Image (cartoon, rainbow, N blue to C red; front, top):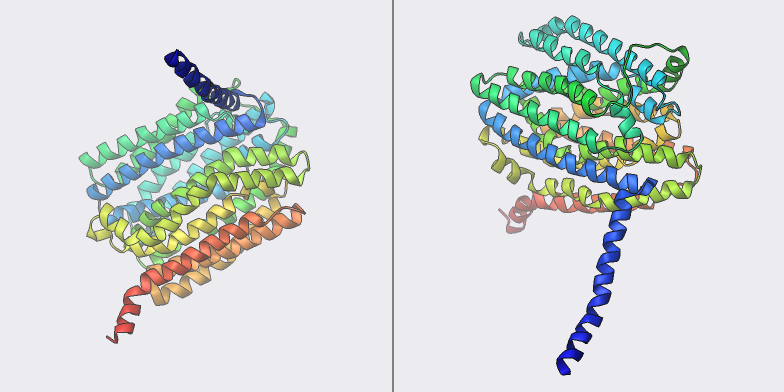
Length: 479
């Protein structure tokens, strides 16, 4: 009898727990399998987080291997060549992918084929321009290898012009599973090609070969896995007009964004040296990892979310999206804060003594990474409400401030001063963006920004004491 009562008591206590676990599983299943906006956002965020995490592991691993196979100057050369190609891409960016995501005809085959045709034409024009500037660039920087290198890298623009519009429609509909797999697989194969080439021939061509391979596979895998319609060359006037109307400010904004965010790598070799550019590039890989994640979420999840919520015209919904994303992404804000304190130690462990100068640059750049993450958290909001002009003017602020600040501070403190000038510019750009957002969306809450800024100020204050503690100790001891 006592055993029966005991078993009944245990079962009665166990039922609520079993019921709770079952409800939790059903709730999770509903969130992941539903067709609502919330379910799509959760699934998209999960795919983005997972794919980004794996990509960064491979990227960091390949970086560690290549720094041991190649000389520091190789990374400076590749960073310089890459920034030229990024510049060409952004100076000709007519906003094709954002247009497909934002436009009401984003699923119309005629609209999509017109966008695809524009992308192909744009790709070949970029390749021609890259070949045209390759030789002059090699003379300016005194690096003859830049001539053939830019010509080969330029071909990736023409290759990627044939990418399926499925990349954009997948983002538009928040279907990011296959999209993430395509991006991940192309990156992994490109990394394998780079490492094998570097083992056989340790030159800058190893990195070039990996980039070309990734571009080819991106087109092939994309058409295989992401196709939503039959691609064909097509030109519709109405579609062209809509693409150009939306993209005209994107074009100007992208050009300004390039000068604001990538001009540093063009200027730095002339202000300092190619070797300093290598240190700067390696520090950027680590400092901007959380920024790249934010950029993906902003483009693939937040921008489509803001676009759908903005159609309702309810500020409460916009505030809700912003607040929930801030809570979700809080752990990521802690990454640059951690980098502020462990930069020197981390570089000492990861790289050999040739790269020691990277540590100081990383500590400073981590602050700029935090500010950039804040900006990316609402970067898609201005585009979602159709205010691409304000988006462009935000980038004008960074363009107008980073160059004089970086040059001024680099004269006194070298590479670390150069990085500090860019950080100050980032803070001014963030303030400008928030000003335009509050003008465009009256009633939007600023409570999240206040909390994040207080966290950053506290971390910078402690970091200042952290790095000056030897001087303080010596002063207190009178030595």
